Image 1 (spheres, rainbow, N blue to C red):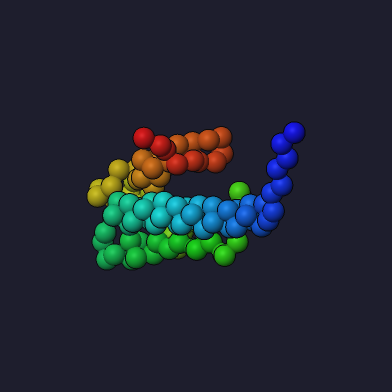
Image 2 (cartoon, one colour):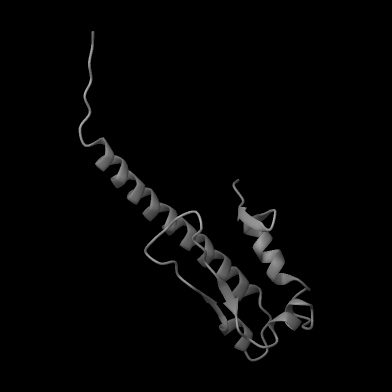
Length: 114
């Protein structure tokens, strides 16, 4: 009969879980920053306020399946720009830029993989 005994397996799994969280957090942040940059570039410019008004929140140190990163634009007229009020950008430029990187997944979007 052969017998195996593994020691410190739980500790190793905890270490791996932490490492995966760090990598996933980094990827999530990179993807969000890529979208933020694309949205900035696509935003029509008059005086530049709408383009400067894009911001991103950074996730906390904890990461799980529910981690959420929010990209916002607090320009009062961003909705009108997105509806096509500027000749510089076609209507729905926000959705178009988002769908270049992510695909719909019900009411959630997920990263497109090539």
